[in-house]
Image 1 (spheres, rainbow, N blue to C red):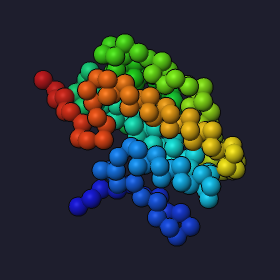
Image 2: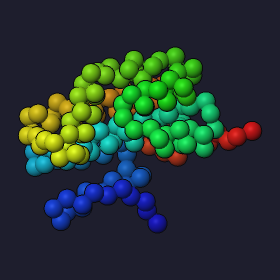
Image 3: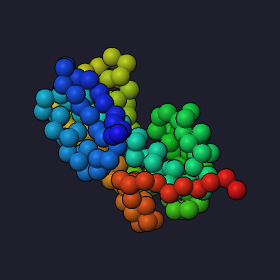
Image 4: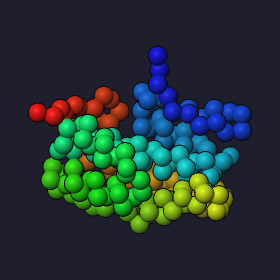
Length: 163
């Protein structure tokens, strides 16, 4: 059985399968820019969140179950930054805003996502494009630090158990 995450959009399914590579997700996100820039912006930030959560689990110092518990109450960029500091910093010696080269741009992408989710705005292709690229670039920055530490986020994560 294949696991998937799906979003229903105007009768068409936008589905990302768990086994999809990060690069294939990013290509699909970019394809939406012309026809549905708001959806593209939402998906780009969701993709970043999925990636940073997996990175924290993979690079964290605590057992996976402990890290997953911390992530259950983790929402928003500042909380990701805090959990990264607690779990990953001692291992990689970089804070999340140091890993993500354009932290300001990522924060702007998150603000757009927040406004879209709460129905406070919509956006056109031009406005969304920068934010989509900022979120995807941030995702690549996180993936790069993982690769430098021997972690491939596109495969099953290593398991650290309680001792």
